[in-house]
Image (cartoon, rainbow, N blue to C red; front, side):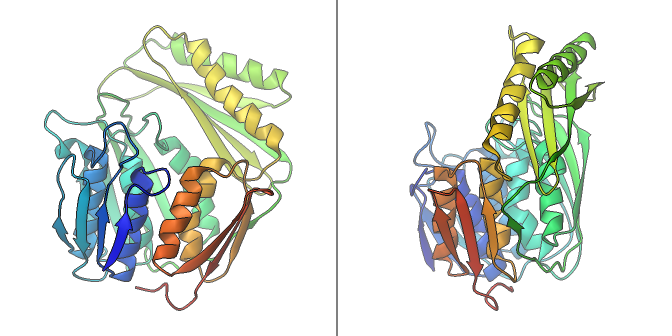
Length: 352
């Protein structure tokens, strides 16, 4: 049994998610102590508990410690990963519901299901666009397209928007299964092809997304970046607003967003997303710091080495790298002077 220190490094939920993914793929039993010890509210929150139960469901794992607030977990896989039709609802994990990010549940079980022997269909319910988590727009427009370049054939469709704190969103995901994951090399991003965006509200006036869209297009034009931002009123159970920008370069993709909140003008929401995108553009890097972290796991499971350059080496990334190395599937080298990440899989050990 692999013993994992949940307080290691940045001490957040990534330690849990990566550990669950690799336990399901390898069949290796794990114990995790000090789960999310680095957070203000340590232990399993609703989205983490849902991820634990989802990972257990797909490999019939035995669980101990699967409760809200638990800082200890024992996870013993019972079978290889089983493809199928699954529904996981973050709102069921806690009385009164939750807007916990379903994207974090998806990132826990996606690669295990992608490597399973057949296809799967997922329905995920909860928060789709939640601060401090990858949004479903980022998953659709950046993460999944980059995974497709590595051989992971997955498509996603947003059925309903779910904002913090109410949630109520829904997503459907098709996973082809039987995927062979290839390495990726991204050292140069090439020229900027386009910036596209979505300015979205639910249960709010239509002038709000239009103001966000206009502001973003003007700011990006001033920065020399031509953008097309679509203003939309969409389906959701509660009021919410946000803007999400995707920059498509010759060789890579990146995305940034901003969320509306009470007494924050629509123009300020657009400012937040635009500032992040412009700052990233000026780095010249092909990969944003979040994607650099998210690509570590597929790179570790690939059949060839991966090398990529990122805008920033985060503690999130170095923590994730250490957890991956603990399973012995790959060697991860991080060059902080060059913002370079190299992942060398130990080929032959990565099949369930």
